[in-house]
Image (cartoon, one colour):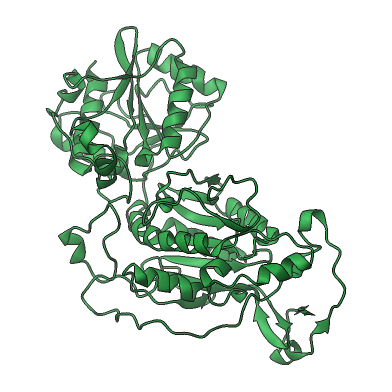
Length: 524
């Protein structure tokens, strides 16, 4: 085989020089990583240049998004303007090289991955077309392009202008998918670093096994790996950077593209060179691809709602003592799960009650902020978190002095539930959560709530068992209910947007419960 000749040429002519023949195996560095990212530069297959069925035109008055599993599209949504013809654009980035006297570019080492991805999507009635774009010509508008794919093997690098525009694209509701097509550690590690720096307010987190991405079309509980995967125990492994409750940046440590395209021979070549690729099998890669399309669609709509700018109150601008302030706790987990939801609830509270309300929520850092001005603290998240000793002391003092702590399991995921139970045992070692009876006054403090409506996912999983009753747990401190926990998502319902596979309450029920909880906290 031939080794690629790398350069950043000034003209196409310099790319067409004969490739350098390499007959001896290359000596590689640590654990098959290679001396440089260039060692991974091997094209997986020729471009099949197939064309999928032509999509509908942008002017047709019908929706090209089918109903998502567990999330039927209401009639009002079906009357909205049509969605874009494109779902996931492959980004042309990086430099080129000559392989077997053919120009090959980093972004297109797996040239048929998006062709097969869109075939899988179309088999599920998602009528989108594959497309490519460069960062120079990209619109950076999620309404026109909901997601983009960065695939390759070499280090990801952006200019300051590109960094700013990509950041805003994600904040506005877009999604970036990074695929290290062969499991190249160079692209994988640089992707984590670049996007961590791009979003200092967040960080990458391993997706829990009950995350919607693994269940939105089919249940992915076990996977197989073509290469690597020894430490994953047959489980899928993805890292996501949360923007609200959705994944803004998704990074795959294990290659997806070749598996989706069904072109796996390249891994034999890489292993003969002394490299250690990491990749999903063809079957698992395609199953993940089938789930990725509806996730982009469903949570793209979430991004439209959560991407709107929200004003926060400042800690040094305390509201009048008669005005209710919604103070939300920061922690080391994904604490800002549903941006904009609190304001929606407070607007409903202002309408339904005589309570003076400050519509700006306040974010509180328990490690350094004074919480004495905020008798109501709201704590939510999506996955694991760990409280510091300082945070434990502040929360304990808060409720001991008559404050209320409300905990919400955003999306109703098991990982957050386990963390909430564990960490609250550290805060209140002598107490434990107890189910509040249906006769508890919290269900009548403002609205009389005898039954509730669950989201489709919760209805399917637990509807018969729950029987339409509201489910809240509590901890009493000095004989008073001071800690309230909802194991099913309340906050998502306040936002009036459909969260695919969220286990929680539908909008009106969520708002009634939220108003009752605040009224109870303010009057007891």
